[in-house]
Length: 108
Length: 118
Image (cartoon, rainbow over all chains, first blue to last red):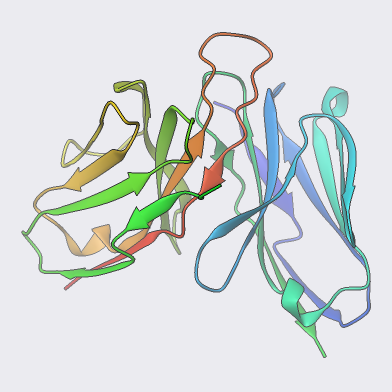
């Protein structure tokens, strides 16, 4: 089945810094989503981005489907950005496959 | 528009018991998927239901089962609980447009049920 790798596994930032999270996937995808898992465990939708670029406030994402990777950019990070960021993909009528996540800690 | 609702939020059970978790999807969504999250294994797919039919199943023992009702609400059941079943169980809802390609399969998750087996 499709494999998803996220990097880096852990990231510590000073408040105000920028960061880039990467997601590599092993096969063509129909769907790619970025999630932020809050401290209570809920997965919050950030982007639905099987291809192209999207922006939402301080966050933006780019997926290059032909090269099988996606990037999540966080600018001017805040302590509330802390948590685990997951990339998940599916190839059509298949379940979402999750990467292991990037644990982000933003320090004031 | 209401989101995905999972009940209960927290549950403590004893080994050997069984448990039933519930998930109400977003109105109009016909696909419901279940995932188990543990620190060691990450997020693992359990099963997916679409229009009351199980469409996909993950690699879990037969103690894990589920069903979907005509109103798209879904339940999952775990029988003969083991300590290793302690986990966060997440339910996802999506439109589930069947075999039409390209499909919008964007998934929205509930808050999860945290199950502790003692």
